[in-house]
Each structure stands twice: as structure tokens, then as C-alpha cells.
Length: 473
Ligand code: ADP
Ligand code: MG
Image (cartoon, rainbow, N blue to C red; front, side):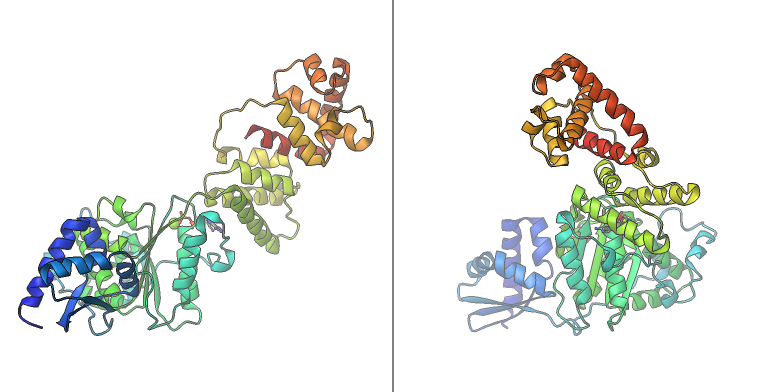
């Protein structure tokens, strides 16, 4: 390498930065290093395979152009992944006295911190946050909104020590109750069972308190060393990371782990770019791996999760049974998040166990009422009622309008008329006309008939509730 090559590399980076903008530059090129220039080829290195393949597929031409502008002899670029172990960056530790503990922690008695266990050494401080036995891959239901996140999590969990790291960090973001913690703990369980890798799951709070406690007991160095001794670091709820010194420490840790080829997995309730309290370097580092969003749970996914939950509950409470219409009702009505679904099943179970009464639609409606997001009442059309009732009972719409009097069409017809009366403002004669020109007394008879039946026939009552839901949503 001639003496001017590093200078040229600086200028190449300057050009690149000007072309792609600071943010992209930070995300993809900040950690690129020049190894050497040799026989018309510039040899560059990056810390991860993911960065390498991304740069090769998206930026290689631009990069070459920038090189050629500074050094016309360059014909080709060679990007390699730096050997992880050789280059482990151990950031210089600040002297402990100089570290600002962040607001509100210095004067604390320390009582609250001991809730996380005594902190005698770095290793103890790294005890990890508690894991929930139920949050595994086996219990995670896959749907459209989480397929990608699940696949990335699986991939990361299946990797072995010294495997090349594909996505680093893997950053998963989603709103509350959409499965972030579930996925992160699943990775941790998978890592702790059988693989030789050391996986550590920490909430951002635990990271902060572990660090602060370690500082207080003068073991910050041990803590840092221990942290860097793990293979996979999983950090949940990163949005709660606060305080300048913990952030700085987090940044060092992140860089050291990633550069050493260790896997980092992070969850937060927002994308890296929206983590306002973190500094730019950390944000771009976070954005430089794979960022995956999990969307809201769709209705199908909600239903699957509910079924899963009920099946799980039945292992311990074999008499607990939730009829299918109740499950679909809850899946439709409770739209907030996975936690509410869990809450709904728990309430049904509690009610069932405490009163000994079976789960019915009525009971379910009462129990989960406050979990339901209020929605605008919708204007219901008679055509829709006929269509949905026909589908539900497996008859055709013209059967409902016909004069046929066989039982398999009489009951659905009555149900449809009853719904038309209760869900629309149409008069009895108008409803009669819309049902193949019937007399208003026929409609009245149907309405009374069904009203009488729902009081005694729980199954019919449930069916009607489900139909109402379908029509009103
Ligand atoms: P977050 O951490 O995103 O707030 P959690 O992971 O704590 O959400 O999920 C909330 C609840 O919903 C948990 O009981 C979790 O098991 C459940 N849940 C969320 N998504 C799924 C899913 N895809 N499959 C099974 N359960 C899920
Ligand atoms: Mg969570």
C-alpha cells in the first residue's frame, strides 16, 4: 500500500457520503475499512456477511465510481468479511468516577436494585431477565404479519457458534402485545437448549440496572468483559434504554459484539430511526442489520392464537371447552393485541372454573366486554343479511326468498327475517316484500318464533350472535 492510499480512501468515503447522504453512509459504510490496494484492485472489508452482501448488491458500482474518481487505476473492488475474532474491539473503559450514572440513580439507596439480585460480580450482574416457559417457538403462531420476523428469528436461533452471522443486529419492532417478547424468548430458549452458544436475554432496564449496579460495586470492567463473553445478546424493549452513560455503554457493547461476530437481537416498539433518545451512531448501527416489523395480528392469526391457548389450558383443565362460535367472536371482537387475547381466554377459564358454568356466547360477551374496541355501528343491509344467513346455513339466497317450506329453509328464513327486524329500521311490511313478497304477519311470526327460541336454545343463540357480528363489522 502506498502512503497515499489511506488518504485516498478517506476521500472516497467523502465522495460516497456526499452521494448517498449521511444516514445511508453511516448504516452501510461507516465500518468499512481499506485493507490494501494491489494491482488495480481495492481490497475492502466489513464486519458482517450481511453488510458485505448488501453493499455488493446495492452499492458496489457507486463505490467503484468513487474509487475511480480518486484513483483511475482501480479496476475492481474486493469486499471481504473481516475476521471477527482478530479484530474484536475492546473499547477503552472510562474511569469509573467519570461516568455519569444518569438521572435519579446516584442518590438511590440501592434497595430497588437488589430486586434484580445481589450484584457481586460482572457475571452475577449478567444473570439475565427471567424467561417465561411458555414463550417458545412451539407456541408461536405464524401468520402473515409475522412470517418474516419469525423466519429471521428461527434462522438466528439455529445458527451455531462460529457460523457466519447473517443479520446483525436483528432488529424486530412492533406495537404492544404483537409478539416481540415471545419471539425473543423463543430464541433464547432455543439457544439455551442444546446449542453450545451462550445466549443472554436482558430487558433494556436490566441492562441499565445491571450496569449501574456493577458500577456501584466497582465491577464495571468485569461486567463488560462478561457481556462480551456471550455469543448471543438479546435485548428487549430497547425504547426504555435511558441515560447517557448506559447508552454509551450500550453502544460500545453493540459495536464490540457485532465486530466480534456475535449475534445481537433487539426488540423495540418503534424502528431504529424513531428511537429519539439514542444518538445517531447507535441508530445507524441498529439500522445496519436486518430491521423487521411485525404488523397487527390479523383475524385469522388471532383465531389461531386463541385455539392454541384454549388447547393449552385444556391440558390442565380438561373440562374447559370454548365453542367455535365463541372463539370466532373473540377473534373478531378483541383486536388490540395478543395480551388481550390471552386475557380473554383467562377470563373465560376463570369464570368456567369458578362458577362451573359452560362457556357460552353470552358469558363470553360479558367477560370480554372491556377488551373490545368500540366501533362505529354499521348500517346493515337486508341483502347482506340474506347473503350471510344463506352462507351460514348452506342454502341459496333464492331458497330464502322462495315459498319452499322444508325445515332446512324455514329456519334460516326466520333467522334472516329476525335479523332484518333487529338490525335494520325496515318495517315489517317492507321486510315481507324483500323476502319474496310475504305478508307482514309472516315476518312478525318469524321474529317472535326466533325470539322465543333463543331463550332456550343456546346453540341457536350463539349462531345468531355470530351472524350479528359478521353483519356489524
Ligand atoms: P410484545 O412483547 O410485543 O408486547 P408479547 O410477546 O408479550 O408482546 O405478546 C403478548 C401476548 O400475545 C403473549 O401472551 C404472547 O404469547 C401472545 N402472542 C403474540 N403473538 C403471538 C403469536 N404469533 N403466537 C402466539 N402467541 C402470541
Ligand atoms: Mg414485550
